[in-house]
Image (cartoon, rainbow, N blue to C red):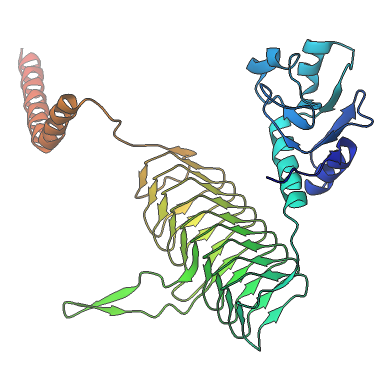
Length: 369
């Protein structure tokens, strides 16, 4: 395997500043002149040409023995370990984990710079527009009137459908389909096998049959969105399905027609949203959660894992509900009890009515006395 190129730590710190648009405070301290790094490593086994980071204070004792060329940590953790001294190269930041994420983005970008151009085995329509700085790999198909922006990368066997637009610096990994007249913003990442703009599940009942409703809306994906492996985002029936800026969607997720995700939402694997569901900004959806259609989830709310949501109270911030796993015999007993709940409810109501009747009789007798 070819060794990664080394970069001065000062260059990496500056690149992180640009990557986060200056939003994350950071300070490079200590004897860092001449220190060059190739990658990011774990505290326990980082090498001298790597950067390690301390995100969890419980691992603070590992920092002194860490062999990394640079350590990223919070100011208070640095003071606990070294006091006022700076015996090694360090990056001081209030959020080492976020720094790690931005730094990895930078390193990945530096190590995966690609040559632009269209592979001879790709198929690009005459009316399509592919920026000269973009890359189109073998087997990819760019259909009529599609647009591929600057520095975009269309992976092998991917399809950009009729009239669709791919934004600058966006990457479609191999075997991605962006169907006709969809829009993908800038700096997005679409992982292998995901499908954007397939038909929504729309059928009208008629005389015992199901009549297909053509889905004439589209999908609009805003900037900085990532969509995981084998995830489907269906096109709208009339209006567009929308994925808001900065949202992150995991693998094997179903987002049905006319759904709208706000900005910076997160959905974990195997979750699903039925049609016309709306999420506000900064909503978190746990793995394998299911959200019924035509529901509005407010901004900042959290849906727990394996939770089925069929309605949403206006003031709720966390919705959680699932049946935890248990030993088989205990589960069977619980299932029997659950099955008997309707009968028990009737008996309880009858008992409540009988008790109320007795109380009224007792009250009447006392009044007569």
